[in-house]
Length: 166
Image (cartoon, rainbow, N blue to C red; front, side, top):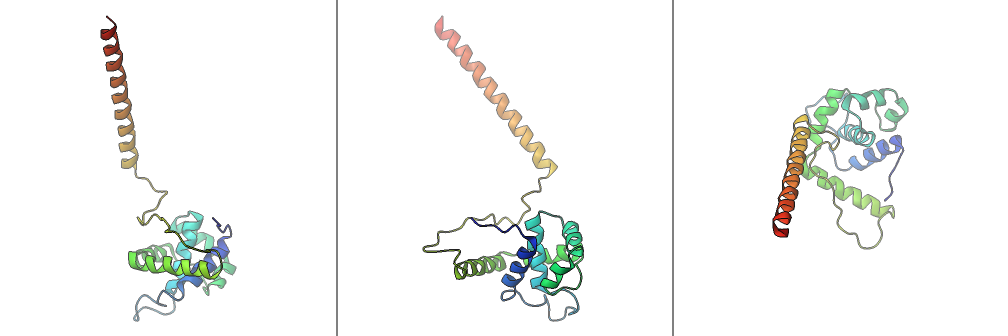
């Protein structure tokens, strides 16, 4: 599998991928002096690529004016703008069209050859790096309960072995 290590290239490619699929603006009544949907999508892809928070990607983009110019932006979007865009853009039907477009793009560039097998992706739309404290606590409780059950089973087996020997 080929992956790109350049965040600038990831930003540009995500923008190119989103251009034919996303409308320019979320609503015909939205302000047209802000950011376009493809630009925000590219910023969100960069956020995932760099494993950053919304504030982290805002700071990264603010420090990289050449990257912003690559996708036609004059300034970095605010973290609240990115958060709202995530809620709008990450929807099942739209993501399916994006994945289809990405597969066609990869095939056109010769990255996929011959018969294409189905690809498995995590489509839960949750952040893979976020784990709640409740989930961690339940995991510890489950592990402790399993260990306790294994000790009981071993103890019963040793008792049963002793009674058979007598």
